[in-house]
Structure formats: structure tokens, C-alpha cells
Image (cartoon, rainbow, N blue to C red; front, side):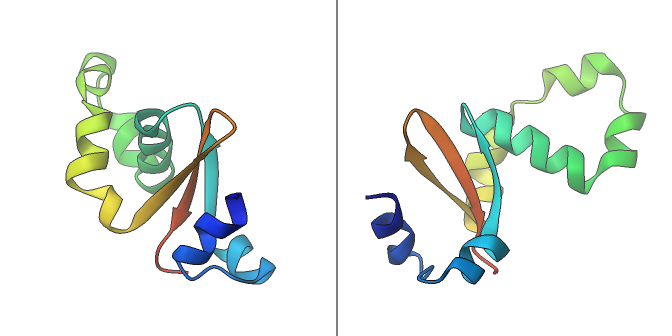
Amino acid sequence: QFMEELDDYGITEISQLEDAYVGCYRDEATGCEDLMSDIYSSEMDALPTWVHNAIDWELVWHQSLRYDYFTVYFDSEHYFFSQNF
């Protein structure tokens, strides 16, 4: 079932899976926060904690990142993949 869902996104080979896979998280907001922290680590480190904690990561996912990434919900986890693999 998991591989069938990936097939819908054009991932049909292990090498494509490895190139596209970003991570596995309990929810999309946590995955989004982790992804943004990886990409913008120095900028995120410069933010005060109260600003960083106030960011609505669910909103960031739905308004911005879901166009470049997709998730597959499987076995109570969200598996993140880049659409630009």
C-alpha cells in the first residue's frame, strides 16, 4: 500500500525513493519545522525562542511547502518526500 501511494507521485524505483525521502514525523507541522530548521539553520538560530515558538508550522506547511513536498501517512507516521527528486 505504501509503495502504491509513492507510485502515484512517480516514485517507482528505490533510487528515486532515496532521492526524494526527507524524513518521518508524527505530524506535518513537526516535519515542516524540522525541514525549515535544516534549510535555514543560521537564520532560525538567530530568532528569539518566543518568535520561533509562535510560528504556526501547520500553516507554513499548507500555504508554502506542500507544493514542493508531499507526505504519505502510513502506520501512524507522516513520511515526507520532495517532489523535486
